[in-house]
Image 1 (cartoon, one colour):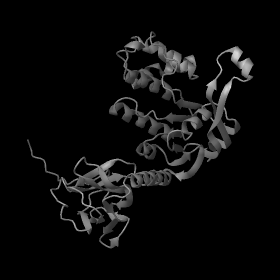
Image 2 (cartoon, helix red, strand yellow):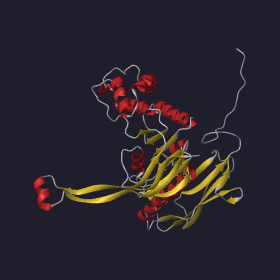
Image 3 (tube, one colour):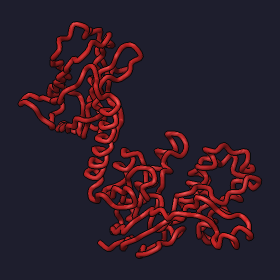
Image 4 (cartoon, helix red, strand yellow):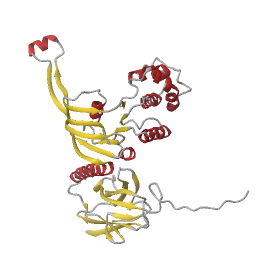
Length: 393
């Protein structure tokens, strides 16, 4: 495959002013326009994105992800290095830029589509599909100021995806509209991918990145920390996030009156990080009581690897008292006939005080395991069900 996009040792910095001289007199007297510091958004970033692939950019706020998209879209230029692209780029970065509130929805489509580089012939051909996709046929000739913010975003999204690009840049825009409209957006993206389009996607939703992207890069502090398959990179990123949260939790609860030891996940063959769907899962939790905690509560939570909560419970909900717990104890939490389907999961374990429900010790999503199922079911869990034969009417 040939590359659709390439970053070659790209640097990008922003000048941030801590003081700016506002008058010509101040500039002349101080012989400078202000006091500033340079902050690097990207440092020596290099990667390639193959034509027809879907590539995610993940990382914390301020990592440089959106700056990378703006460099690809030519909204920004690099301070050094090169950004290469082959094909027409469509950027869904700032939806509705250039919309005018007193113009009708239709007039704004004409204006916005022109700004995005569409010809008059293309706009004429795409007008009806844009209006239909946005679901705004009944109000398209009303002034934009009568639209809700969600309707305006839907219109901006509809225009942007109909610019017939070869490369589509997506920046946190899949939260546009209600669930039905988001489904429509994902369906369009899948069709775009099926036609051989190239996608670069920035999002804080790891679930969305997994669904859209096959490859990903983790950017932090303006540098690429890891690049590879989306599953692998997301796993590394989430591990680092959870380890950081663990350290913060440990600092906050140092000197805890009840400490959680190293939790073990145990299957039919002993400690394991891999389980078959339907197999019993035992969570073994060692506890050390250093001081008396009034009405202690032990909680266990399961999460999918992207952070989605699967299930959570605690001893109080299950009417189990830990008041008589000895100084050292091991609590076993059993999930018989594990109903989870294929995927990667994490376990959180926490001890709380009933008075105020404040954490005494907390291991946030620290323990990982995978589930395999071979019956062809899809989704998150296997639900008990049955089929009933039809009855003749």
